[in-house]
Amino acid sequence: MSERRARPAAKHPRKFVWRRTATPAPTHSARPPAVPPAPVSPEPAGPAGVVRAAVYRDGVRVSSPATLADTYRELRGQPSGMAWIGLARPTENELLSLAAEFGLHPLAVEDAMEAHQRPKLERYGDTLFVVLRAARYLDAPEEVDFGELHVFVGPDFLITVRHGAAPGLSAVRRRMEETPELLRLGPEAVLYAILDAVVDGYAPVVEGVQNDIDEIETEVFGGAPEVSRRIYELSREMVEFQRATRPLVGMLHGLIAGFSKYGTDEELQRYLRDVADHVTHISERVDSFRQALADILTVNATLVTQQQNAEMRALAEAGFEQNEEIKKISAWAAILFAPTLVGTVYGMNFRHMPELHWSFGYPLSVALMAAVCVSLYVVFRRRGWL
Image (cartoon, rainbow, N blue to C red; front, side):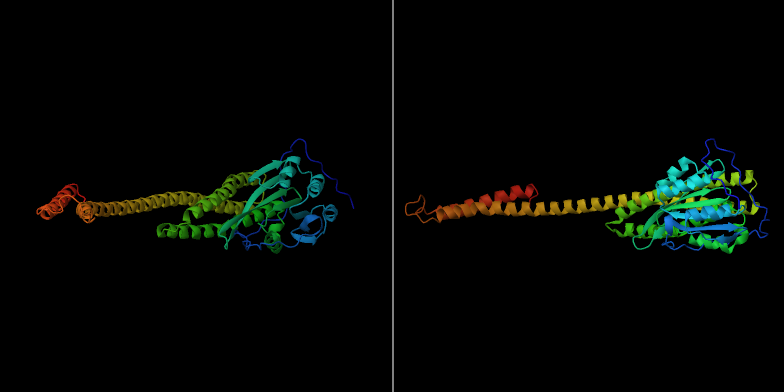
């Protein structure tokens, strides 16, 4: 058995050529069965952080190595085979081992070691490096959870490096193994299936966000106090969602152009165009969500301002009414103060007080009190206090 020589990383990128198998394309033109929603928790990782590795030949699995070393050995024994290696949060040593075996470019390996990469598509010689942002909707907290997937596609291998819970690729592998005529087309067919699964995973997110927006609209016009915070948080998630979906449009069109240039199976090109149409639709929905949330935020700010103005007007009216009551009370208190003062002075019962024995003292004091009260009443009445 001839040994397969390890390929070092290319210093000068070679012409990118997709390997097309001699197997004829499927006769049907319908889209392959869609991948069902993958479980959140993938299958347990095996040794060396490998979630699952398999070697295929003519669309059929011929071995399931447990380690990377076993995978290399099995692939060397299958000259026309293909290795599909899935890893979750691999270590640096694991990625360096893959780079030494398959000749992965150092820049791509460096990107795969770190998460938080933007979606992109890069060609390094005969290897394609793809970064995808998967998403899933969490019902309980009403949040969008984002994961990251790095894919290396070569002539006889496909490596997936997953960061985060999404996406689970076990359903993609099951779908491909149940469709050997599609798997027989090689690594580019697996890449299509992964892209299709990631894009299909956006649909539940779009539906969940649409329900959230409908609920937010109801809360806005219902005067819910916490709706502004919910709008802001959902708007931030839509920014992340837009960053995940918008680059995919250009990536898929570039990939389709590459497939056409290098003579990839026409049926596979049709499938990829179908995925591109779905991505375009999702991207347009996300753009409309951002615009809708911006409009809702504006409407909510207007309604809050109107409510605040109404409250301030009510407070001003209440203050005005209170001031009017105070003025009335003050006016009557001033009117009653004059007779109270006179009566208090003459009620002190001193023996030697002036005018105590004056026969006109009583009528004059009563007349004086009445005159003062009438005068004060007239003054306050003219000023609008009474």
